[in-house]
Length: 372
Ligand SMILES: Cc1cc2nc3c(=O)[nH]c(=O)nc-3n(C[C@H](O)[C@H](O)[C@H](O)COP(=O)(O)O)c2cc1C
Image 1 (spheres, helix red, strand yellow):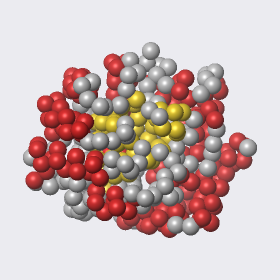
Image 2 (cartoon, helix red, strand yellow):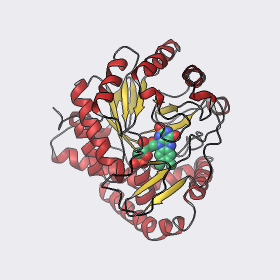
Image 3 (cartoon, protein in one colour):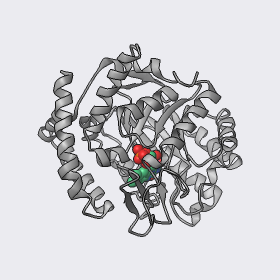
Image 4 (tube, rainbow, N blue to C red):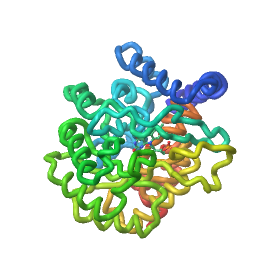
């Protein structure tokens, strides 16, 4: 069976790298993203296209299954927030092989985001510069559309505050987060509170401990059974991370998503010239920063918090590294854009191989193996 999946992935990967990607990369990155969303929506809309997609991309293995915080994950590879901002791909992503997906970030009000162009490829660096500024349809439209839907894989709902002058005010910003949290209190399986959007009005105020405390006080009051993750930036120093952990200890926080994009331009992994001034950078540029953060938080909290590792994953080895450093689950976007959608299955197949090599019977045994 695995040899069939291996060959299938190689063939699809070849077509993606030498044909589809070359065509996609001729066009503006956001236009391609919008096209993929429309195409994915179509593929998800009927059982025939869903089944065919599944044949092309699916892979399952018991060794990859975990129950985390009461949620069953078929495999540890998820779609990170920002790709499916409005929850249009919920019917198709399970068939692409993902073990879970995160929609959003969703804000209290509909948000046009920043001016275009606002998405660029850094081809040499295998990264993207992202300056969307939280474009999304707003919590009311999205929750109304999703409230009666059945989700085939665990669904994370990423929440941020509306990117506007008013919401830069702490109290209004908190109300905005709470509005979305309430709307989604019974939709999906976990919350990701995004306090690290690098492109929004007023910066990232909730990285600061007093403001984070105020925000979490209000989130604690929302009646929901769903676990809560905090998504933080890779640009924080360890003192700032310590503060975030100490505040999280006082609230209903179950885990961390490590990490969001980097704003810094002096990163040695930036290989391209003339990069846009605005925006956060993804992919290989954040990989080391994210890995350092995973290792630090895992060691510091001794596994008390569930870690979702994200940033620069483009192979099974990259994903396994994050898992061995302390991540129970991983997510990606940029790797899929550079390598193709068969990457998810390649990672899952590769993880099974790596687990076998290291003598682990289940993926959960590898979590934190290098940070003990
Ligand atoms: C196009 C794009 C949009 C993103 N939008 C969001 C977002 O709305 N909320 C969020 O928490 N992270 C967002 N991110 C960050 C990703 O979720 C992820 O943390 C980051 O891209 C690193 O993963 P990667 O290297 O696999 O892309 C976005 C990333 C990309 C590439």
